[in-house]
Each structure stands twice: as structure tokens, then as C-alpha cells.
Length: 310
Image 1 (cartoon, rainbow, N blue to C red):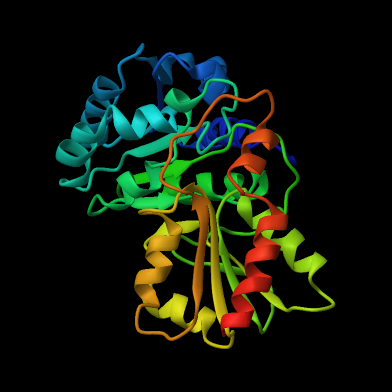
Image 2 (image 1 turned 180 degrees about the vertical axis):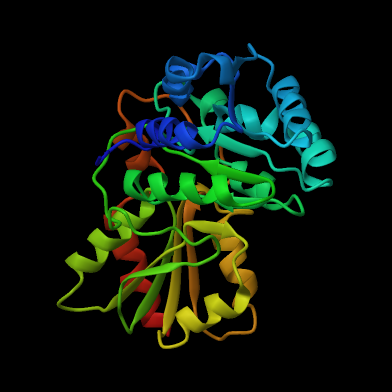
């Protein structure tokens, strides 16, 4: 089945996995209707736990379940599950390498109506900083389906961030998700654009609009961590400049990781993201993306400018 919303793709995939894997337990923090944990609850009510507005407790319970051989999927908004439960994730889950899957919905600016308190612009930085933690950011609903399957099979702590909104798929439906492996979505020779999540589609649009004057290589970085530095260097090797794009702070996210890997490179590099500020309320998702410059036009503009420096 094809989906165009990451949350619905995730929820239905969990239901599918739950048919054959009785060890999967889903936990929610009063947001099952948004995270789509409600789909698993309807199918397997005895394997869904509603924890209430208590993310820290939810992660501690998840750790206990993992110790008994269960595979807990703990859901909440990205801003809450990464922020409120940091201590439990670090001390109880990550140090012991427990098999807990942490899923942050409504990531980035995608919860456009609720403003700064509900918009997660720092969750990748928080979770990537934790040793033993794998961090996943699928490009779209197609990739979310396969990433959910992959993290269910993977042994160890995982954080996966998901967008709240409907948007078109750019990845191939049914393509096996390999943790730690970026995907070249379009070959190019002038500018290497490393993008993650929603921005992968934006990078592809920018590449298409520049086709006649500039060659953009678009790389989907759906695994933020582990992301091998040699892989980044290899992907950027044949290009003259590098641009990164993410719906996250410019500090501590994909851009920081790519910049660290290319620190000894002489290639010019520009990071597109949220410039050290919180989110804000808006009537539509696109209003926020326009305001913060997370658009295909901005990727195009930055690419055109940076090639002049190469």
C-alpha cells in the first residue's frame, strides 16, 4: 500500500509488523491519535500502553520492556520525546544499548499551528550527541515504511523523526532501507547537495530547475547517525562545492556532520537550515518553510552563489 503521510505510513507498518512479531510493544504519551499509535492500539490493544503526558516515565518503562526481550516503540512529538526524556534515554537506554525504538512525530516545523513549544528544531542534535544512538530521518512516506521495518530488525537504540504533513514521495516504493547508507537521488558534477527528510524533495526540485545551467548531485541522507565520514568525502569528491539542507537548526544537525567530515577539504560549503532560532506559529506549513528559507528556491540560490566560490 502506498502512503503520502509519514505518520500514517509508520502506524500501518507497525500494525503489519505486529502480526508476526509478538514482541513489538507500542507506547504513547497521550498523543496516539497524532503519532498513529492508535492504529496499533486498535489492532493489538494488549500490546499498546498509554502512558499519559509522561515521556520520561514512558522511556523508563520502554527500557524495562527491552530488558525482558520486547521491542518497544515509544512515540511522542519529537520536541517532547527528545527533550523531556533526555536523561532516561541517555542513562537507562543508550548506556546499556537497550533495544528501544524512539519515534518523534511532528518534527521540525511541521506542527505549524502550535508554535515554538511544539516545533523541534534541535532533536537531531540532541539524539546524535548520545553514544550508541542510531538516528534516522526518512525522506518521505515510502522510505518511512522501509525504515520502520529496518529499525524493528536492528538491535539497539534508535531515534526516528517523522514529518506531520502530507507530501509527495520522492523515494522508490518498496526499496529496502539500509541503515547508514545515503542514497544518490540524482547524479551531478557541480554542487553536491546533502539533504534529509522533507528537504530531499526540495533539493530535487532545485536540481531540476537548474538543469540547464548547473549540475546538482542530490544525496538523500536518511541515516544521520551512523554517517561515515569517508562516505561523505566520497560522495562529494567529484563536485566543486557542497550544500546541506535540513529542517533543523544549523547547529548539530546534518550540516554540522557533513562540515566536520569535509573539514580538511577546500570545497566551499553552505548549510541551509534554521538559523539559531525557535519556530513560530503559522496558518500553513509552507508559510514557515518560506520564512526560514527551507525551500527549493533557496537551495537553488545558494547553489548558484556557492559555485562562484569554487
